[in-house]
Image (cartoon, rainbow, N blue to C red; front, side, top):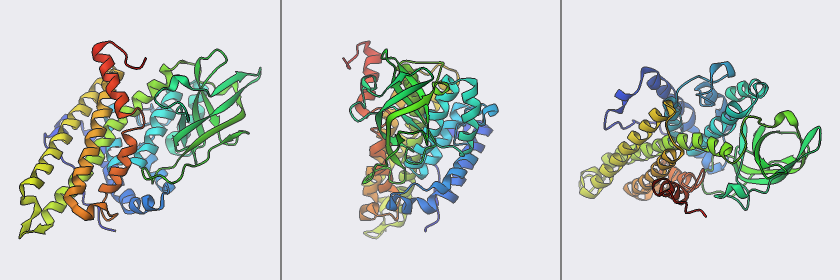
Length: 392
């Protein structure tokens, strides 16, 4: 295995905008990725297996609920620190970042924001330490971009709820200990429920034959008359706004994470272009290659500024869902385009597992679709600036 020689680009000296704590948290995550992710991730992707051995390390660098208060096991960090951790993890692999994003923003976040004090104390410390792993059940086989159409439902049976339905494309589901599941009650109101592995009628079949996110475990959630204790209902928020609030947090992390994937592709292409000699000189000396590299660093720098400003707004409690949506769409699209251009710089070598670029490219094909597709995010921005919804 080649050593991880990654050097992060910072063309506009954005480190000057970060606190010492931000840089310390980021650098710790960066070193962990170099030491524990880079040496194993290519083989994990080839084998289509999530490397469970990294769960402990993810917990140790604060990747699980970094913004959750320390009293519940989190690190008590701000939103920019969370973003930087996601950036470094996705520099290693989007699938590994997906695991951390789901645990933080889609499992710990709703329990912290919408859960009871008993639920917080029961689940959050174990999720923060990685003792428990979680997943998030919103998307259904027939309802992806339109989650309000969900058919998964629960009925009040007196001393418990009875849950029926199915969820699809669920990261972490094959090994998750708990699932935060969104379902409609008998009045059609959406609520969150905590479903625990081992409950009768609850199964999590794995999704196979993926070309993307191969080092991430994806599956289904099947509910066949699952008895849910009433104390497992998240009591403090209901309606579609509840799961969408979780998606805001996750999309914010993705906006940062995609920058990491783009930086890795750029750094790989830049280094290769200086070493690869054709026509008597390094290809970095040819105009078309310089064009590619110059455009890459420009787009990365713009995305870094977008993410940083969004992080400031999140810290101030001012970031809107539409602003988060714009950053997710722009930065993932940017990363995918850079991956494709970087692959061309490497020529045929770019398709091999000797380099990370093709793996990033395949992963980003999922990232541009999940947590709101590229087109849906465009329409969210369109609705925000015109005041007119194109969804109905």
